[in-house]
Image (cartoon, rainbow, N blue to C red):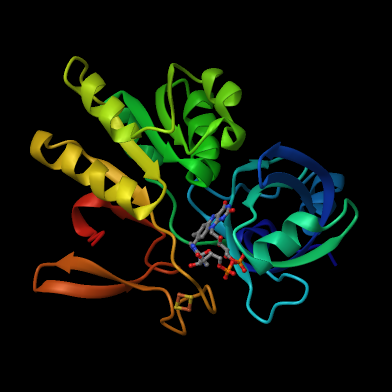
Length: 271
Ligand SMILES: Cc1cc2nc3c(=O)[nH]c(=O)nc-3n(C[C@H](O)[C@H](O)[C@H](O)COP(=O)(O)OP(=O)(O)OC[C@H]3O[C@@H](n4cnc5c(N)ncnc54)[C@H](O)[C@@H]3O)c2cc1C
Ligand code: FES
């Protein structure tokens, strides 16, 4: 029996088939997966409602006991096709990136709290700040903002030329400042000195996010960051992914999987 739309939206275990695989950059592979229920919904004229930018899939990887969290880098509402961009960081991500087209995967999806897309309108524009593979969830955010005719400007940094990906796509949505081998937040800071910033969405290595906070805080610029932590369950039960958050009482632990991965930058410590 066909599941209801409400069931299709809820985070739960699903199966997916890899239908395309592209080498995007050194050590980076883009996978398009068909979520099997999404295809079923499309065939019946129903809709598999979108995951939102900032949400992730917790993917069972062959040969590993634990699932690996990967951001939604895109999603096609009509077909239920999910885009994931994987960097070979270690055993699990390398195994995933090595799977051939036609492979079946098991995933928990969609998980986590998204970027606050609804806030962009009150700022008039969104600024994307990304470092390396942190661009993956932000490609989805930029696309969705652009589809809503919101202005998008991007600042993106990569270690070297061989690691660059996604820039031509970002240029479809608005101006892009590309920094290769330098510090992307320095470029951001220069532009902020002459242009009123938009709402910032960011993802990247912790030192980049720490530098971003130092750029934003004195200027009172609002920013939301997607954090990366090792995960166990992915659904808030095991506390493996705890991170320190500022609270009215001083300091509290929150779970990146269930309370995040997106947080207001003013709450987060990057030390
Ligand atoms: C919400 C979320 C979204 C993510 N989205 C993406 C994505 O779109 N694309 C992508 O390539 N990666 C993404 N990551 C990171 C990805 O989950 C890790 O690179 C992967 O789980 C590492 O597993 P591994 O077995 O390959 O590496 P391991 O052998 O376990 O570790 C290799 C290296 O990666 C570090 N690492 C391990 N787990 C994580 C983790 N969860 N986050 C950050 N660093 C880690 C380790 O400290 C070590 O330095 C995301 C992480 C989170 C939490
Ligand atoms: S991974 Fe288990 S609580 Fe977050």
